[in-house]
Image (cartoon, rainbow, N blue to C red; front, top):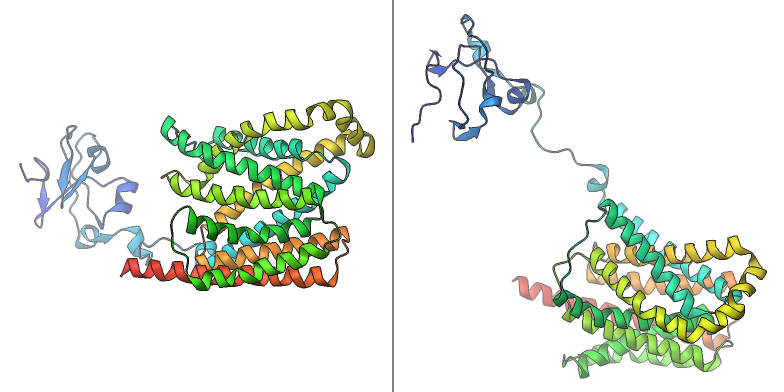
Length: 405
């Protein structure tokens, strides 16, 4: 390959004399050169000190002009970036400089949206006790939000094929069942009691890992779950709002979300979490609609809608349903984004604190009366979840370090 830079270019002090580069080229090169007559360059690029540049950037095609003697200052004139003393490094933004503030903001929004969702959800059930229909509203508003986001490209929709669909259907079914049964429990008993029962979810996860997936669970992890079982038992025995529908629904929710975790591990893909959650929401909505029509359809048509509108009015009724769906979707999405930013131990602590916040705020807002034994049992259960989460997070961190070494 021919190594010359330009054909017919006049040289001065051994350097090719080119026409004065454009402003964009002057900023990108270390030196700028004095003007010189040059022949038009063809479509092929020219190698200049090992770099291939487009001819349109390198030279302007114009009539020849007299060659002006070049001084040393002109030949070795530094570019603007060097003259300004810039190192060429990108400026670090405020959020990049203080990542802890960003993570803290995500945690705050996660807790805030979750608390608002639980409070608004329970207020709706106080005048509209139809958890199957409300569950459909939760998912439907989220699906609309996802479709609009895809339409504007935030985020860009990831393609899905039949194989991936087969993997996501079991996950979506368990998500739908767990979501509906959670709402049935919320409608039947106090929010604080439902969250106390749902504190047993780590126990079901450990049992499924041991007996279904065949993973060996250490004895220390099993022992850390003993306070959870004890605390939930104490709280259940003296809970003033206790009924079997609320209790069994919360337990079914725990089992459903446990199987959702199992199927999620089998359905691991390269798709980002936002798109995965969007597809799961769409499929789960398709599962929930028939159940809502079957269990609550006739009652809704006869009296459900009319009673709710008579109590709070059409505007408030529709506004409440819209916002509870938005808060449900947003808190789940923010939770996913938050947990992706932190280590497993921080993730575990965050989950425990979230449940404490929800229980505490629900008691304050609704003025639920709880017995001393219920309060002690709830505290023991939450402490047990914290201990379990801490031990499990430490085990995962040790495994990660062993793999990296």
